[in-house]
Image (tube, rainbow, N blue to C red; front, side, top):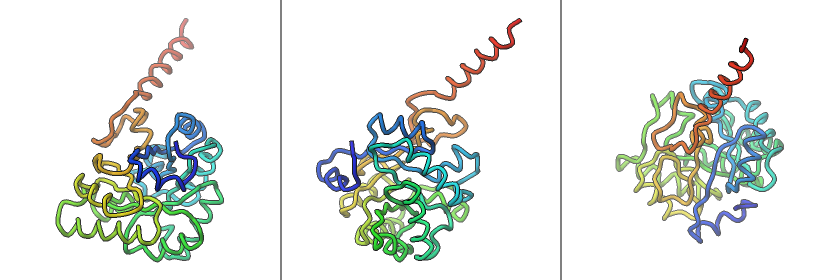
Length: 253
């Protein structure tokens, strides 16, 4: 179990995978922390699994600050990573200002989506001693531009671009990089090339760790689950059963 971001490099060298889950509220973050997850991500995925938005692009800084603060109250040990939401890092100045706001809300590190095109923003954040986590591959904040969620790393051009993005983020000083929906062999190749730890989601087992949306893990969002996510519980059914039993009791003659 991690207690500090400074321990991440040693985990890459030891080969013990990082286990990362999302949280958006106090009880979930406390349960994850007490269960022993290494890192907790306050992801902008909250837009869909908590707020009912069609994608992550409608998530605002105010929403991220609200949920980051709630998660912070529940966590005593695991480092907390918070997402910079859509259009909150268009310039280096904006990226740094909003990264500081997330840190003030309780984050231990911040994450933004993109590679080489965002190196000025990344450098501004890291230069101010704010730990940074990258995110390349399938970028949820770009889903409308790309017309859906598409696997990355299928062509030589894509592979070259992904490797270049990962190397650029690594050289800039990223602590870790999320690799989302990348062809397994490509994700493994990236992992071998960089010093930063890679955290995969839908990118195979060749990364330095795995991240999953907790709702997908526990089966509390039954209306959609990505194909790579295996539910280990059926919380939705448990809630439905409990409510039906309570309704029957209340309505009993």
